[in-house]
Image (tube, rainbow, N blue to C red; front, side, top):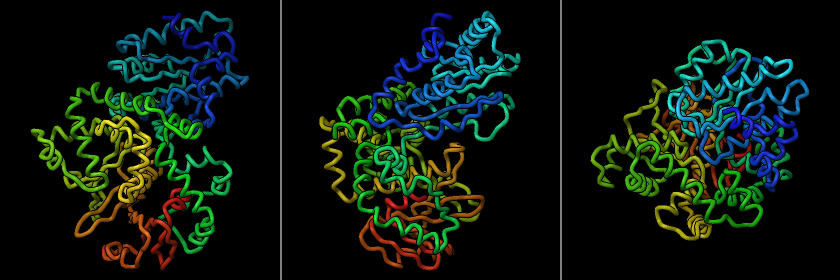
Length: 479
């Protein structure tokens, strides 16, 4: 096993060899090089066990290698103190114990053995009962001078595993990190730094405390609206995955195999969860018809002739665990809690996921051309606009605790697209991607007793005593 370690840690020969790591070389070759802000959220000064979750192909392994590259430039850290291992070829938690013990034995044979270590275990959820191995080593005190980052592509596997390590993860807030596809703001920062410059140092506006002066500051960005709209159209095609972004940026064309790569991830994860591909396909086909409308488990089950609503629930939970989509629940305005038994909504976690799945269901041969054709339908673009807003809210309000619910919707003799919960307050936000917004569009928000509210429009700017209208692209850049 030591040979496997040596092969995966080429920088043990020389720290500069990290530049020859396949992931680093691939990153270097990209026209657009993304360095997630998440890189700076790990504390390497004392014992911690972090998790890193997110969809496959989002760049988790590349992020780990970029962190390793950064650590290798620290003169106070020896190259052998940093170990990376892809756990795909490990069979059980005993293999994890053996791997780490072999690594520590290797360190102890070095001159002046270092005490502190940095362990990066990639795709650890591929190992059965992996948490038992980590718990065993923590309880023996063997990891007391270590920082661990454990990555995985399944929210449930990693969450349930880490819940079995209570009090064994070190001190510090938010040890569970999530890497998601880029938001529109992050996309603009990457593809058009000059356009993003005025927004880059800006502090996000708080929808709960939006003043008229704040509105005037936001209105000052109005001259950027046209250019941002053009970029938004590109974003709706490539989504926030780095590979598809670079493909579209470099050549103007996203090849078929890029879509196929993401489809293989989705189909593979569902198969791994024990889900039938035919049923998966039927459910996704129905979801594409629902888009951003409300639905119930029973409704989908009846439409596609599945025996029980429980089956639909289990399949969609697996999709949520794999970061394919996220469910949105209605909120009880009195308790501020989700009404989990009521009608629900869902949002795909990225436009590129939507196009990949749509092409799979309809057997597209030319994914990008069909995506661009669909996008010319204002109804489709309106749904994607709402999806972009939803994903912004997931990034902003739920990424620190993916198991919590801070983003809801309301439905009762009318619908409010989003209700954001902060502390015990709720902020109503509507997406109306249309040319004309009337004061009457705030009627339901006002009727429910909200003194403030936001409508995200296509072009309209307006402030009226706490009720605010802001164009979509400007909102996505400033909140």
